[in-house]
Image 1 (tube, one colour):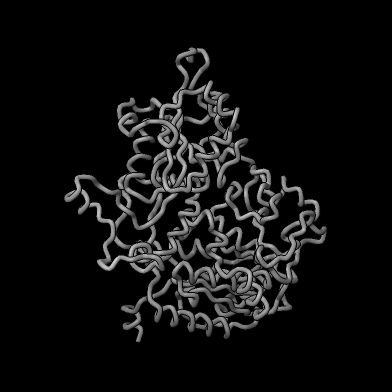
Image 2: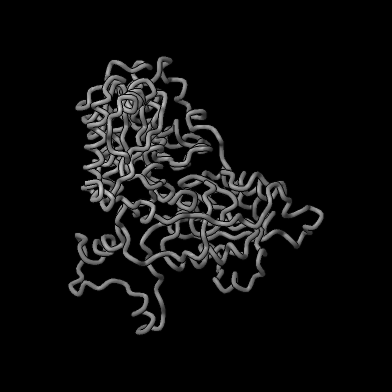
Length: 507
């Protein structure tokens, strides 16, 4: 039997165990010489309520085939109700894992007290057998590994000393539009008279959406000739990849301009679908499509027969810093004119902030929200969430969370002036995560789950299923390409970005 097990798939299981109950059960199992599957790697936490969804996603990304959460029995939590918080996150996270292409059975929650060594043995053996049947997860093989050299500019370095800049030697600045809606370009125009202030200080050397510039104009520039290029949009097409790499060479600074460049944005939600499914819908199966020949754009055929080429439609959408090195980030969908003006003037001031900085507030949106003071002192406890269209009248003078709307303001970077909230709509997270947060969606999920005022599993399911039918779309509306899991697993059609330039995570 042991010889056969040597040749059987051995799943790797990460266990996050409560210090006061499940971890002591594991300790008792060892003292009692109980033999259970050796596949379990245990991480001790003070309370199961301390297990953040990001910990679970990190475990899967780094090779775990399954994750086992162990806590005190309901009603016995050393910290009163930490295990209930764990339960709410667990149920919502399981639903989202399915959207990532991970079988929900790979995440398991068990209440195991300090005296239940036998139960721990049973659960460990059962879970190991279940994962053997499911087979290896292989997340690490399915996802790209983004590691890039640093951009070629030092922190705090004065790029344009005033003594060198004469009246006809204004620094050159460029703007480029990749995979986005174009709202960021509108944000530049929305500077209104401030646009003239900016134009007085710089020479607009590349802005093809507004002025007659060609790619050839950039190719003829010397490397580093542009002081800064503001690139908005994610990267989905080969042409976009080629141009942003060209602009990286020609620019001293590259700024990811807006949510799509910063995090992947709305276009990044396409990572939840396969390239084939997208093309099938828009060229074959869509409700208004008539394409009996079932043809799709083919760059190779187009170049051979028509004399021009089409860009390649890649398998996935990538944020800008997953394709080229990025120096700074301007968040938002779209960035507000004030954010844009301040960012441009900061970059032109000579003394740069630390590389990788997000040029916006480092505090949560709630700090600038006019409704923040209406939150109850005892904290928020939501018995039922509603979607905006279900609320007959949104009270303009009461915190939207208190009204049961899923508002992500507490986990979203400020700087937008709470424009959506002032328009009686909840924050959806376009300014991205606060400093130090690795995975915005995991942070948002953890926060929302913690507000649910229910301890019964069926009641929690009812609240979640009604108001959050699409956790991935809700929590990663702008940030799916920057998620720890990046895209839905199994979505790979073979048309990949160039991988000879690796990319570092800054945002």
